[in-house]
Image (spheres, rainbow over the protein chains, first blue to last red):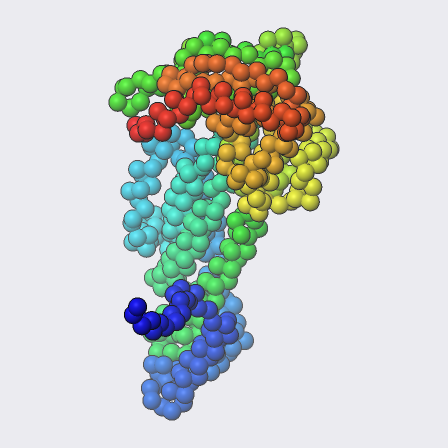
Length: 268
Length: 260
């Protein structure tokens, strides 16, 4: 009989752990704070000219001054008016077109190629045309924003309606539901998550188009304000304008998230 | 009131123009207060027959009709689907209310009716839950309550428990027996589970496959609520064996079939 061979112990490693690691939330706040601090220190030390990169405190001061003297308020009112009007008109129209093309086979045949052909056009390229047609006033800018909102909303509504579960339609039919009942109680709720995805997409587009339009053809508005201070090389005020824009985008998104939670309570 | 299916045939034509006869010359009656189970291997057309009975699919030939209908009365079907078909955006009570809304029932009466059926299927406390928050068994209870709430003249059930695990399934079968004894609705129940059919039905109708034909009808003459009792175990087992022997060949053929 041979001598017993020496054995060792093998611990089974936990192999998924590097994929499941989590860190506490405050890490994000701390890291952003560090970054801002670094930025402030670089500016204070005079490593870069404040003409090109003003310190965070300098930008904030400029922002407060602009708020105090009503400059931000004035621009914001003009911008909000345009984006609100454009967004509401564009999304309502998109919703209607999406619902109709999604449910009626004839409207699908007629409308879908049209929508698909016009969708890839960068809407900002249409501004000169709209100015020609509708004048230099608010209408051309609002129309362009509405156009930019219309397409993502229409396309998402369309696919949301198209993807309705046939089983649910069958259920509704088996209970003798009317056409209107099926539309309102089955097709529309089914499409709502997709519609909201379209609205969130459109929110980004509308902000982009707003600023672009205001830089091209506006006296007042956040876009015009940013361009104005850029021309004058007053960088801290320029950046204050950018902060207002980013806050606007943030609030817009939060508002849509809130609406979605209210309208789609079954998806959380 | 009773339901008769007379000489129903169904032929599907696929895209290449090939026709496939799914049902051939089906004659079947569901009497008042009778529970009929339709059993067959997969691909025998049992779900197709159920859909035709519900009016969701048109037969190629033959007819489905209710006999002995009181004048002015429009018979109602209600269907319980295999995948439940609950509306994910409606809470339990709103799902159950759906059929009543389609009937145009008044609010107060609707509320009363929904409450009654929630209690009947044991869903109290879950009224405002959404389907995705419920277990599979609970979801199918909602499906059953939704169907029963419209007080149908004929209840159609399309493999309602086949998506459930074995334990839940056994519990749901027992509950269905109790529930059925309370309501005594004429029922057509589609399943591929022989044991389930034998436990639930008054008559088990066996379908052969391709084309589906009624190949045998077995009458289960044991009182439904006593089928769980040990003294009947042997008789029940004998029924199951008899039915399995009859359809085993078809079931094996179905297993080997490649989906076209």
